Length: 68
Image 1 (spheres, rainbow, N blue to C red):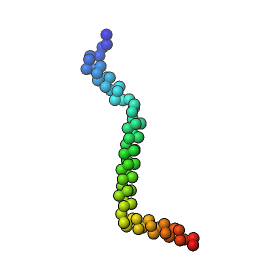
Image 2 (image 1 turned 90 degrees about the vertical axis):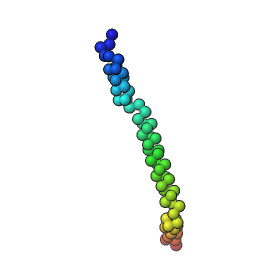
Image 3 (image 1 turned 135 degrees about the vertical axis):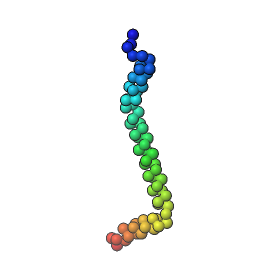
Image 4 (image 1 turned 180 degrees about the vertical axis):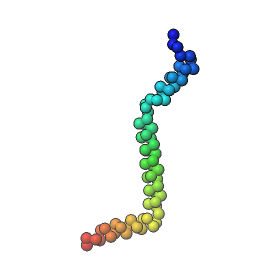
């Protein structure tokens, strides 16, 4: 028979489960994906600005006319 009492066995089982790294990579990928989606959303909002659109259009024009 085990020397641990039932609450101690449950606590030991809980500690072993919490110390496991199982699923950590999946959680990290999920966090990284959410950060990428948030950044993409921010870029969409910025790119819809008339001022930014004008700056980018001017940059493309100057790049295309630089050689000619």
